[in-house]
Image 1 (cartoon, rainbow, N blue to C red):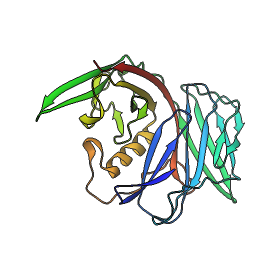
Image 2 (image 1 turned 120 degrees about the vertical axis):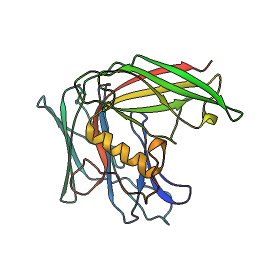
Image 3 (image 1 turned 180 degrees about the vertical axis):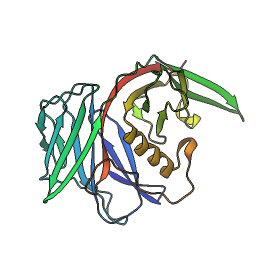
Image 4 (image 1 turned 135 degrees about the vertical axis):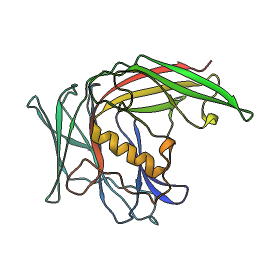
Length: 264
């Protein structure tokens, strides 16, 4: 599904099997192939979405691409040939996501080859989800706080996805590196506009451990979309994909955990 946001840029919104919402800020309007997908340590099947961008002035239809040959292999020697279950959506059959395994994506479409590689990091336990409440300027600010112990001596990268009353919060991209907090206990506030969280709301947060390439991808996406603390005033650019062959998008092997809380 594609839609215009603020009437300025083109965005891609992808709903994966894990209900992750990914918003891709597109600088160009020339049609380009977009490949997006994830392998997690949750049970499959996992999906790869293949679609094509449309011109800015076209209808808000983001067409899926059929007819691709899609395979994913892992470091255990397993190769899974994906089946197209709906237009542009390809699903695995036997593949299992395991921390420490490396996954190779291969896509063949119209005699063009695309590939990507991602290694699933180790699980970092998601200790707890708490709430931070502050007041100022006649406004109460309520934000979720994620709490966990970062492992020492290993570069770690995290992404967080927030849901409020079951609806994904799409306005912010939450990514975190342990570059300045290696081995420390981390309590990180997911800062949002205060109007989105109120007393009585249910807040769910998914915590992903991701590799460095995916962290950089979402950090660039965050900067180009002007969200969070790294707002960018420059012209937006497409984030650097880890998919070779000229496609947009990303392929990620990642762990996932979920915590929930009712705001008191």
